[in-house]
Image (spheres, helix red, strand yellow):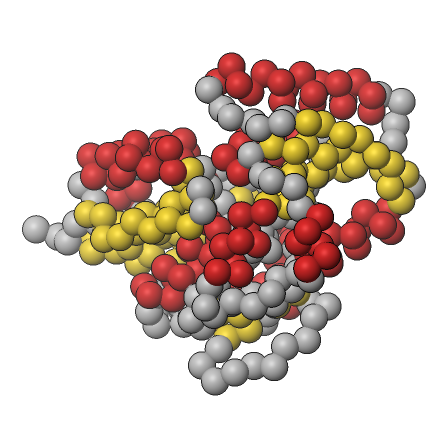
Length: 315
């Protein structure tokens, strides 16, 4: 089967919005190539080269978001809608950079394997090593290997927001804890929490494909006995408060979650939130404080921020 690759050159800050446009147009997953991912990883003392020099040189400034549609009679109309939607984003005050939309035809085999050359083992923090299933890695003392095969779902661990969350999980996950992963994507944070010692982890995502890929990744890492993943509307499928909640989504949703978050975190429990673009940092911090949580730490990486907060103890 022939597929149409839609590639949008934009800014790091517009990646989420552009991805949503592609999803709305019918793609089942996106691939994100962001020069900041490479720059930040290569600056870390405990990281190593993600891709070879020739690939790094091929990156353009900013980010490229790619999605794939089957070559059907109406694909021209779909691409036209994508172009119009991208052009309209500046009306919402969003800097899209070039906002250039390009189209090319690819074979199914090429499409399913092309992105793999960008994904090598990485170590975002001190303990967790994220390794794609097709790579080999020699385990060092104290490390835990998280093997992942994201397929067409998102969440390979290379994005700043995922790296920030993993580093915070390494600090706050303790044995016997119940952990919620809201917007679990490919399940990477759920698996990380289990590998770090959580007794029970529940992941939730709206995307059916993400849930499918997450469950496959759970099996690959042999953590199905401690991790469950459900399709649902964020916290609607959760029934009791957790010791720790991690939410790697977007700032707007995190702000909306604040009004109900204390129902889902035990007194003294931890909330790690990320997917927050720097421009939204203060808005999110205010919303978190307004509902009574104490911010323990705010950390930044590239254009992104994570906020770790603690629920109040019982009086």
